[in-house]
Amino acid sequence: MENDVEVSPAEDMLREAAQARLIELTGEYYVLRDQYHCMALDPSAFNKHHGQMQSVLLAERLEEIVEETKKLVPVVYPQLEFKIGG
Image (cartoon, rainbow, N blue to C red):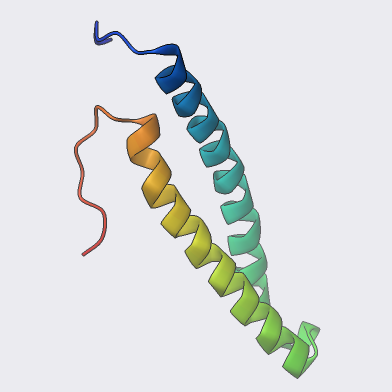
């Protein structure tokens, strides 16, 4: 069911840009999450120091994606009421 609320062209462009970014982040998140899980399942496949550093970098980037997503979701889906965080 669609709302009959008028949206300015600027708001519409902002929402479309946020939606495109959210789609990009979602794809990146799943790729990185799979890499992280593969590293956890087979740590012998990576040099110990390099593997640990890569693991930390992946975890940090995943957290950045989560934080950016928390900011984008209300822009893309303003009609939703939800609480983010704990």
